[in-house]
Length: 149
Image (cartoon, rainbow, N blue to C red; front, side, top):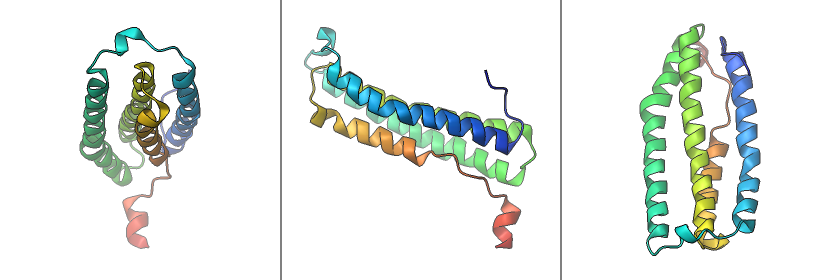
């Protein structure tokens, strides 16, 4: 088990490892959704609507976490680059965003298991994948480096 990060470099290394692990699961989810057998308890009349509502709620949660938690944590980290608490807070909220994005893909699998086609569940796969791709951990510029440019 990796240790808790104390620096931005350690956090970036762990975050990139997690990102690769999650990104590599996307094709596996698509494959699993197409090869697993349909689950009879997911084929009731409103199952598709319920899953779609869950995805919408999940995306709302994603955007709220991004705006209200992650971006403020990133701003604090830029101003306090040597703060272990700031590094861990930033990484914690990024991890929450990554898990939320992955759950959109997982709900696409559930949609498929409920008897839907690949074409019908493709939106879930694409949206979740784009969110995951957008969360690639980037190097953090401090506020003094930004103002010097």
